[in-house]
Amino acid sequence: MTGNLPFVVCMVFVALGLWTLLAKRNLIKLVIGLTLIENGVNLFLVALGYVQGGAVPIYTYAPPGVRMVLPTPQALTLTSIVIGLATTALALAFVVVIWRHRGTLDARKVRELRG
Image (cartoon, rainbow, N blue to C red; front, side, top):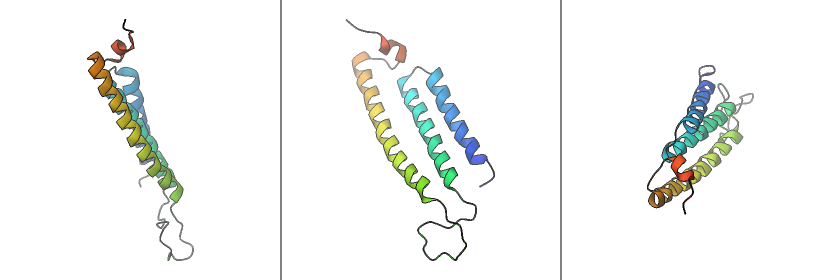
């Protein structure tokens, strides 16, 4: 890896996601913003566990003195990807239901009460 590039990309993902959440009113774009934030956090976890010149943690015949890459952030990231996929699918299902009942994806109009 080249220096701090992964951490800069993490900040860009999270900043774009926050900007999308704060500036956009379309519900699908809000879900995309949440997904960008999740991806930024996942990349941050993987970048934290990276070791320059490290060996794969499941490689048992590594020579003595070789540093291993941390397996915990990788496991947390895999779990986070699965949870993020499920929450994104659920959020998009909610968006479809809202669009069918209200006929709009504008978050301001969805907040208005009917009846």
